[in-house]
Image (cartoon, rainbow, N blue to C red; front, side):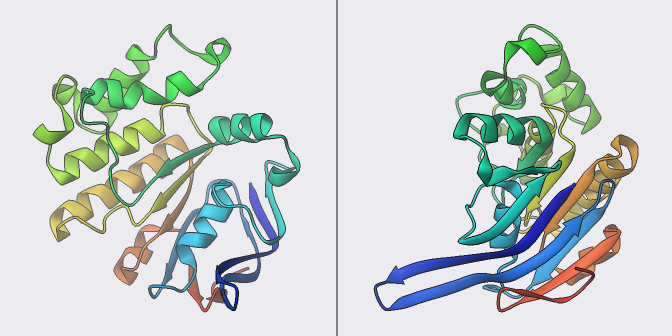
Length: 228
């Protein structure tokens, strides 16, 4: 479970210019939900996602992950908790061009303690994840040899490598055509249902709300529609 308690984030652009990206948001994301966060550009939706993921430190308020105050932990314990509980998908694929598809999926293993590994180097799990996203035949391919949709599938597989409890996605279909967007969203729906994962997704496309179990709309850094 992720709980935001009166969380705010202010950026100081200059000595006299402050931007209140998120303003005192309180909300809870329960296990098993598929929450879709929408809003205009600049509404604070991506900042809210980054706060929930522990990628951005709040100016005030608390972020509670699995009952633990995330920013009350040391850097190492915070990273370990995030690595164990969260998988993150950024807006752009961010695959390493010098690595094969399989090695890109395996990458999180290098940031994980060997004690929790299911196999020595993650190869077996990475291959299984590629199969689950329909890319078992692309294991030896490089990112430049993949379509935009295929690259996004690799990113999704990579985000699942550490078997997270929560999958967070920032505009994961923004650079895809409509058909590929539908395919990727169906994949998210399948992952949510079959793996019983909690999914939190930011999108500017309101038509994607139907894929989730709950929608949150943001404006001016606050939740204006949807259950807090």
